[in-house]
Length: 309
Ligand code: MG
Ligand code: MG
Ligand code: MG
Image (cartoon, rainbow, N blue to C red; front, side, top):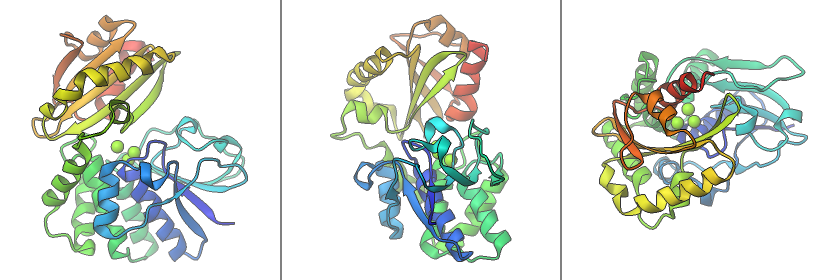
């Protein structure tokens, strides 16, 4: 049976490129595999679309239901972030760089997770360990994924392993200037022109369970905050609608990648709790948190602490 390699819902560049890269590795090892994602190519975020086009890669196939399938997960291991019926599917492998999620299996599986900045970094090691040369375009996609997940090395999640992987992958991909590649991606990613506020909110959005309270956290990485000034009120409206759908809090991180900080927009049943989580005060529904770049490493742990998780 063909192994469907799939990343998390609302796929980011790492989820997409890691699905492509792990599929490439599995095929090189004589397995039947297919890169998948949980949305149609037309709905992919502009950064990933730009990277696919730039390196001449094909978008993964749509996979929304895991029933009866053999699955490999990349960039996640939470059931909630997977395709429908993942719990009853046959999961054969996980390659990730997050905390271990709630997936359980009936059989032994291949499981590879490392505390590095990107799944692409883990996959680069796996290619080397397997003695498999990475195709040029795939190396480009993996390189882009690492730059994306580590915000061009500025995220606190970035490790020396990620930097070493970038140095290796840029040579394979024939990329001269990774800053230039990153700025091209950032421009594509942060473009808000003509995008409905709801789509912007869900561009990079995840729900979390905080001791029984559902908390949604979205993030927009921007070249400058004034990029969203005109749509800010509409973003808050979109957040209100999402919050009304059974959530304790909805947060939107407007991250200024150049200034290296986040304007955190907050809608909450308990604003004081959110203020406490970040040691700051809300003003007109938001607060500027210097140095905040990573949802995973900064925003979520602070929230978990405040919620008593
Ligand atoms: Mg991801
Ligand atoms: Mg990732
Ligand atoms: Mg990410």
